[in-house]
Length: 212
Image (cartoon, rainbow, N blue to C red; front, side, top):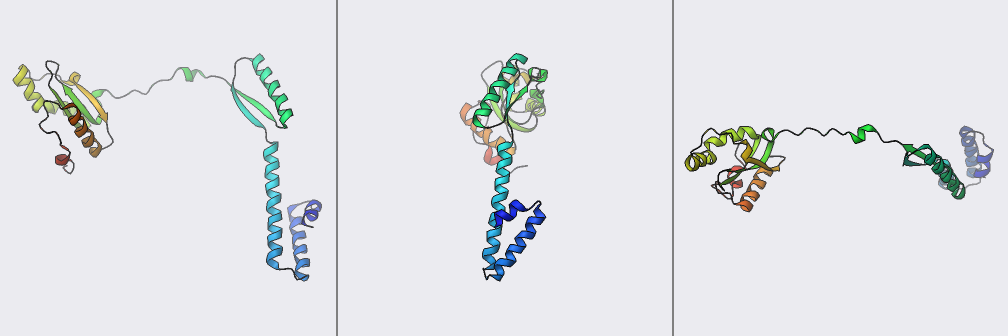
């Protein structure tokens, strides 16, 4: 009866009125109201699902393909149309052309080594095999300047009689980090791995982790 009422109704409002009429009839026949309401609800949900399925089946299936030339595009369109008829689906190709911007990609400029921040770095003396591993959260060039008065500067003065030399070329970045804790962890790992001669501690994380 619900299906008949649905087929004869020309609008959702009229079908809703028919459902109310049927509900009243079955209530008079002493059918449980809960059973009546659940039956009407299930019918409406099944009809909605069927309508969604019909829309999905009728919607075209679009296949994105690279455009080569017009002749090839016409052949592909014809072949997909024949295939769609066999499987009862509307298959439509969507051709895309390659953009010049895809070939000419401008790489984002990376900051020079001296402007890197929050890194673990290594110093290697260019006159001997002395080396040093450290970290900084500031710009690396600031730390390089400070190293002229650290164990690195002392090594250059005592072993090679050098002062005020530009040390930038002797520094390399070992690891880009996300914070102080990560810097300290990787600094410790690299110190244990490389055993740099100019480092005075093999495990600096305990001393530095909670310092400002």
